[in-house]
Figure (cartoon, rainbow, N blue to C red):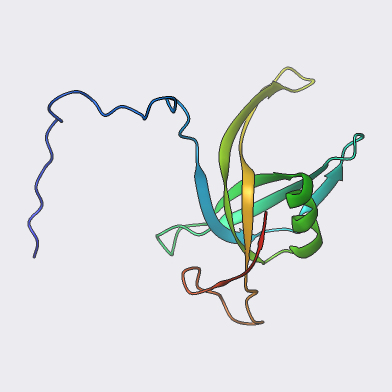
Length: 143
């Protein structure tokens, strides 16, 4: 059996972000299945928005999935709205956003959501068969 070694405090200065990149590390990558069909919205100026609800499995198979809201814009939104459906497995890359607002009743609300930069579509599971997330191969990509 391998022996574990406890790590102590780091000696010397803390690592620094590359010049010009301070505070810019906000990157999210998720693989999961859509828990509902995408909601597609068109704004007055013609821009499209798609809202996806992604069920991401946890490492502990007995634990409940983590549900994440994903927002897509413009041509990515149109592609997701046209080709995705509930149960489809996707890989999402983007950034995390946090919103805070007050309801009409004065209650404070908060939400985290992923703003998608790309969505890769994976193969659909065959009926009656659960797909294994690391065994599926991408069949098309939306940019």
